[in-house]
Image 1 (spheres, protein in one colour):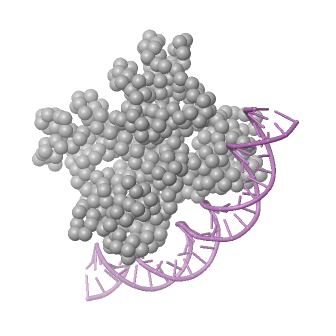
Image 2: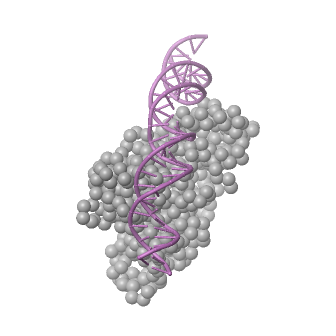
Length: 231
Length: 231
DNA sequence: ACAGAACCTTGTCCCATCGCAAACTCAGGC
DNA sequence: GCCTGAGTTTGCGATGGGACAAGGTTCTGT
């Protein structure tokens, strides 16, 4: 908690333009927090009182339908700001954040947002770039859901995960946090059964390799083709 | 072009806190432009050089898939800022804007965005509220597409349109711009055939009334039930 | 007033995907 | 080292809604 090192932040976009002492100030106002897998960090609809920076681990950002179904809106990887509802003048969080793996985050009270954006050049700009990227990704998700078949959407989701949260391992890229068939179905708007079938088929075809809660993409090329969005 | 009246702006959220002379300044830097139906106002992927305020008419914001299918991401109604990619530090537009009806907009060059947000209190705040609302709506769309059946999505889309762009007419709320079955299918991720069948069925049940390019919602209550999202 | 285009409706077929059910496998706790 | 439950696999039947096709209707331009 106490020995937060300035080197944690100095290479992250929102802080990269700042001096060492500015970073010191920011850190001094932060609290570090650990979250175990499946912990809810903040709840959809609850009052916005903090914003966060993920230092380590992975999060799912989730919405729950009136019928109780969950759908995963996006994932957060290390180095990203999240819960930045204050940037949007919101007073409640529009979705919930849940730790997908053991995670570590810096936490600030909402009132500091104003101060940060005003005092630290580049902070606001970079935050809005983050938002922009998410907005773009959400638009992509909408078009995918509206136009593509299930297998294409699952292929695209795996590719995105591998790219955003992948770790190179022998013979492929492993998605770097525990993820169930159910989770994948919640990203793509299908059922865990269908996802299971697809992964089985792709495993036979040597495109992915998967075990309980783990997925390795071994042939991104062919997944790309399957996704129907060749580059 | 010349006699733009300050009263145009003074009641709109982004400008409501400003003095008469500030509004004058803003107007003096604006160009007014008319767009006929189906005109493309800006193109997905093109360089951001302007931002806009819709004074009159309605727009569709559209993304095109690699296969050439269009999907409608959102609609813009009078009084809304649009093309505000500069707020997100983007250099290309993430989607295209197309006039759905005869439309009138104010246009400013991108370089003024900075100036506006710095000089005019409330302008930035209100812009981000707009973005926030859109982001929320997009999240809702994603959950809908991922979890609901076609008839529910179409019902929800019609309700949203009636609310955002509806005009009270004898016996219901008419969607205030020309909209084809094809358009509705592009909002909901289905085919024009299915939309046509649904509208026919709902017409028999006296829930909507529709003609060529026009839709009137006569029984919002029941549509609400059909949408599966009772309030 | 007419021709052509744009838009809408409806029928039939069929397949991708869901829903349900049952069985298997593995990881961790006791 | 066994038990339990979470996660996964697979089969089978049902069906929503997409694809294709044909015909009807309303607009627009000349």
